[in-house]
Image (cartoon, rainbow, N blue to C red; front, top):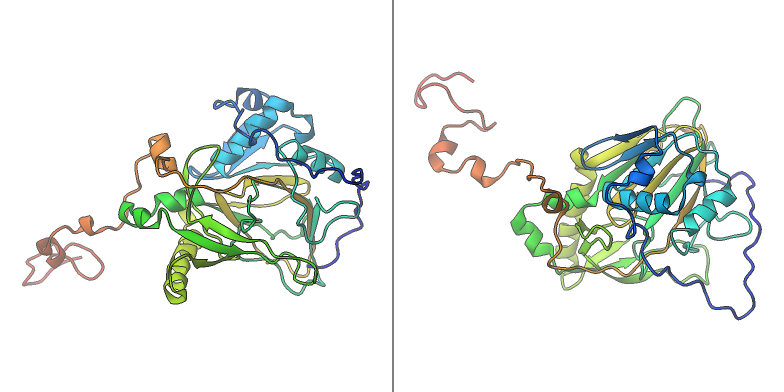
Length: 354
């Protein structure tokens, strides 16, 4: 990631000795309308990309949304994981101000714009040596992990590419077997971030987080893993922890049925829920340029409520059939199938057809 175009904002002034900003009295989305009438009625179209994750809202400018519409949007982000807008007329200053309406902005930001650490710039171009193309969450190691990330992509590669993917941690939890889920609930992980490795004065965020987390807005269970920052499962040996975390991280990364992929266009926006999603970029446009600006809303302390429900339970969605032991529930049935699970049509002792 190389230096970004010159972007500056007026410095944030704070009187000497002033108390730091406090988190809001309520979490964004908790005052949202379950039907989102104020938000949806103003839109030209609302498009759900997949059943599990991803919604695009057409025909609205974010800077014009009123207080109730912003609350509805925050609830939609919590429920759908990530929400997209295109063709936004939004300055960097307006982006910062909008993000701040949902709460205190995180200032642990690498590559900040001039004047504030609350806005981060991203740029990948012909001078870039690497790009963050791994699955992760933003700031999940913080004591009060981030809620919403607000990204505006202001320049896109001329020949396409640079898509971003998100994976639903609600659905990642739902896709595990009930017996396996029960084993994970109550476990805790050590997370450690390193956002400023070149800053000698920087102390990386470090803390204990639940492996299964309850979303504070929806009340749904989340498989709260992050291969970038989760170091070890509390109480497990390193070998045991590495084995289980590899399985869970692979489960999130390979779960194409609960992922969404977004093709960026100039001045498009993604707002995603850091508690219930992971995301990854695709770096397939070298040496072309993609750059944008990002703000992250400071969050709340993680917790797990054993009485909380999964997304499927809460919405009355039946579990998707999966390859389980009950697919072939007897030795006789197993004996009647070949190694691909295709049932023989002839005499088991004689010729057969597939």
